[in-house]
Image (cartoon, rainbow, N blue to C red):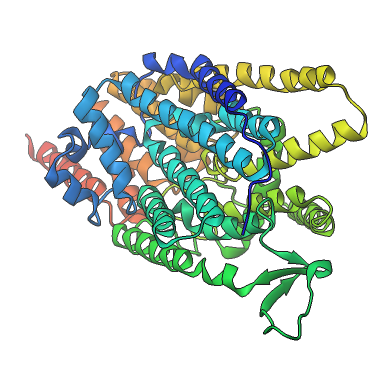
Length: 525
């Protein structure tokens, strides 16, 4: 049984929690003046009649059904409904809800790590990196991404309940773990990797596993069967106690796959071959690391590549292999490194794009919300170890921490500002990425709604030059050409949209309307 062998300094813990909350509010409070953005916010809130009715029994029934919007995550739908019930359609208040959840997530992360390790300031540093890192801005300020912060809230509550159960096992406490885990899955199926993380925490810092040197044989007692890997011996009970969570994860994966299939948004391996998906996954692991250590050119979508240079894929694979071997070889001497690295590798698996649906990006800032915690743990504990090795004073160490955190706060403040409205978001994406056809298409939508048809046609056309198979842009360009009086051009692009996406009812309806209009025009004397 895990036992606390450190003293709790309540005053110190409260100070760290308050600092986390104040710091987050300092960089995120500007969202009170932000608008909804023209990218999925309409599906989730602004044009979703079920959400706009507030929290009703009919809405709750719809949330738990296989609806025609996205995969199954009823708790997220209910959170949006509750926001509408409380605030109406005030976008600033919807944004603030996500900020409050992010504050709670950051505090819970600190409390969980501190409870397990007794290292308050290292735990606080991990929580601070999580709280103000620019990579997490997308998860917090994008209303449609409420599912990410909400599911992470239950991720942290699951961890907290697990620690309490490990300290004092019991059926009721185990039930709390299962309840929070289920609620997390109902917010977003990202929690399917949590059983794996619990097993990592059993090794470090909970110390529930044994090394080779700790194994003793008592002939008077029955032997305990164990599972061995990397000279770490895992008692069978640690595997068995995770089986209910694994079963729930498999159910969540099945339900998510079923809902995606019913929507018809699963991408085939013909459009994006498995070889390209694996190559992109390898490179994405390294790119996420790069953005954790140098968070620049962040944007709402990174277009999926048409191909990957062999040298880039091989280099990424080699670097991943070397880092993995290094951390595993040092896992008994520096367990935080192996646990942090495996946390990072494992929790990214569901969002690497091996299975894809919808407009799947090459990578996404929001995907790193939980995985980056593993790297933050390595930074905090590894940095503390180096400070001791180099005999750095507390003043010098504090200065280093401020040198890291202050620029991150500034960068996060700037990144939050980019999300203030749709034009700012899409123009920034075009500026910092190449061939971003989604950003051009969405910017075209803004100009179209403003009646600026020439500008809209220009951006739709650019999107199609980048990606000729982009059915949505064909449909949008057809609508813009119709408004401009270019009937033949509109028919051409509507027809292209129906060919590329046969199941799109809007494209078929628009094409039928255009053909009928052309026939009427030709019949006129």
